[in-house]
Structure formats: C-alpha cells, structure tokens
Amino acid sequence: MSLPLSLALYRAATTALEPFAPLLLDRRAKAGKEDRARLHERLGRPVAARPDGRLVWLHGASVGESLSILPLVERLRTERPDVAVLVTSGTVTSAQLLARRLPEGAVHQFLPLDTPGGARRFLDHWRPDLAVFVESELWPNLLLTAKARGVKLALVSAKLSDKSYAGWQARPFAAWELFSGFDLILAQDGRAAERLSNLGGTVAGEADLKFGSDALPVDAAALASLRVRLGDRPLLLAASTHPGEDEIVLEAWRALPDRPRLVIVPRHPDRGPVVADLSLTTGATVALRSREPDDSADVIVADTLGELGLWYRLADLALVAGSLVAGIGGHNPLEPARVDCPIVSGPHVENWLTAYADLRDADGVAFADASVLGARLADLLAGPEILKLQAGRAQAFVARRDAEARAGLDRIVALLDADSPLETGA
Image (spheres, rainbow, N blue to C red):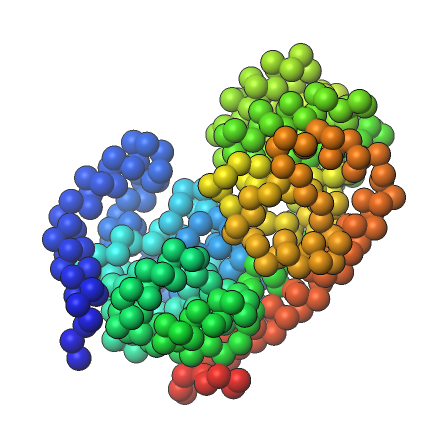
C-alpha cells in the first residue's frame, strides 16, 4: 500500500538529509544540546547489547514525559521480569534524570533522528515487541517502520495542541495512516479523545500518565537533618525556574514584609551560578548548594539534580515555575500536591491546563501573575492554616487521579500479551 503524499514526501526529504545528520548533531553537541559521547545513538547505531527475550520500548520526548513513564517501567520490571525495558528520550537533561531514576534492568537510549535509515537500524537492533509513546511526539519513519514489522503500538497520555491538531487536519490521509495504526490509544482528557478520534484513531479510554506516579523520592536522613538545620524560618520555594523568572521571584521576595528563606531550583542546574549572581544583587546572603551548602543563607540556589522532592517536603509554599513568563507552559503541579505542599503558580500553564483547572476546581491551588506576585505571596504566607487546607484538597484530588492512571497502566500491560488490537471499551 502506497503512503499518502505528505508522508511520502517526508520520507524522501529525511532520506536526502540523512548524510548531513552527523554535521547537525555535531553542531548541537557544541551548543550543549547533545551528549557527544552518545551521538551514535542519535544516528541509530546503538552499541548497548539488546537483552534476551521480549522487549518493551517506551518513549518520552523530554523530562516531564520521560518521568511520567517511570510508573509503567517499575510495574513492568516488577510484574514481568521476563520482559526487558528500553526507554528513549531526546534531551540531555532527561537522560541524566533517567539515569538516576530508572530501575535495574531498564536501558536508556537517545531516540534516533527520524530518518528511514536511522529507524531501520534502531529497530533492527532492539526488535521491540511493544512500543509505547507518551503524549504527542510522533515520528513517522519510526512509527511506520515499527508497524510494518508487527510491533504493537500504544499512544498514552495522548494530547494534541491547537497548532498540531490543525496541522494534522490539513493532512487527513497522513493523520489516518499514523493514528489508525495504534493498537491502543489512551487520551489525556475528553478534548484530546475527540481530536484523536477525528483524526482516525480508536480511543480506548482516558488515562493521564502524569498521574499514577509515586511521590518524588527523598533521602530521609537528609530531610530530617535539614529540618533541624533550617530552623523555624518559613521557606518559600521557587521550583524549576527559567531565565526571566528568577528576577521576578527575587523582586517579589524582596518586597515581602517578613522575608522567608528563599530556595530557587533552576530547571536546568547549569544555570545555578547565574541565578546565584542575580540573588546577590538583592543584598541577601546566598549559597549555591552544589558548591557551598550554607543552610543559614537567605537564598539557597539548589542547583543539584534529584532533590526537588526534598525541597517540596520542606517548603511552606511552592511556586511552580515555568508559569511566570510566556512560552514555557508551566511545570508539574502534581509533584508538590502528592507530598502535601501548598502550591502557587503563574498564569502560563498551557502544558498542564487540565491538571491546573481541576486543581482550581478543587480549591487546591493559588495563582498570581508577575505584576502582583509579591502581594499574593505575602497574603498566602500570612495564612498558614489556609495553606494547609489548600494542600490537603490538592493531595486528595491527585490521589483520585493517580488511581485512574494506574488502571490505565493495566491496559498497557495487558496489550503486551494481547493477540489483537484492543477495541474501544475493551
């Protein structure tokens, strides 16, 4: 069967561009966007050995999507130790985090560039039995080649932005070719389910894998020690900040009548020194945790990987960043909610619209834009009892959604042994 014209043109273009892939990757490596030691993976030339037996391949594009896969990885390793697990992602930061969080027996690789040759080499080597893609990153060469080889395909936590949906609507035959090829589609919400159905997909239900995770891990000894060392001074956390947000947070913090201790966790740890320098301009004492962990400092820049669970448990109030400036889309509010941490967010939460809308309906989150952030923080910190009630409502809401997501995991695991594609409602 011939491909729709747009997919045929895509395949031809990626074939023609494949000889230039090493040059592109080299430039990205120089810019810090690739791991130079692992560029062979991005070319579809893996050197890690394929484990024996059946293999499930899970793909999440970046940090959020990759980490949402972890509950499924852990479940597969526990319930199906006979099945090997391969996890792919596309960013250096996601690879670093997955290296710390993946259970024993799971392999991480960078996703190859979506060229026909790269897809063939990747699939020749790993030979997956089931491929699970998270959210909306769809690579036609990889998907079509996998389907042609009989790999079962699942799309979970599936969603489509307005731009992406309009793009697929403009190419209906290509959309049908890709979306109808999935054996299981679990939409992130009802809106996504309708869009995916309109494009030719058979949606079996709703499950958002951003839910269903365990609480962020924490070193219990470090938590107990810091609770003592930090003392009774309230702690305001700015979690996962981006350029342009640190300045807003620091200005708001300076205006607070009784300044709490401020902990800033930059989204990208290598920004730690820059954030520390910005903090010094306020006249506050500043500690960069990776270099000189001074617990008495007014501002602590926590530029260390894997400690967000620690700070959420210590914070009296957490600003979930990525939401104060446009173009980022917000970060995960479920992580603080699971550990009973009160949440405040900026207005730009496009990547988490449904979660924030539901948290708002549950009266489990507060909002503030940059212009009123200082006043809003002052009001919230002045009412610790109200913050505690808000955090409890958020925690209860997330617990319910986590249970729904774990039911979705049941369907994915069942697909591994299914003889035929799962039908709607199956």
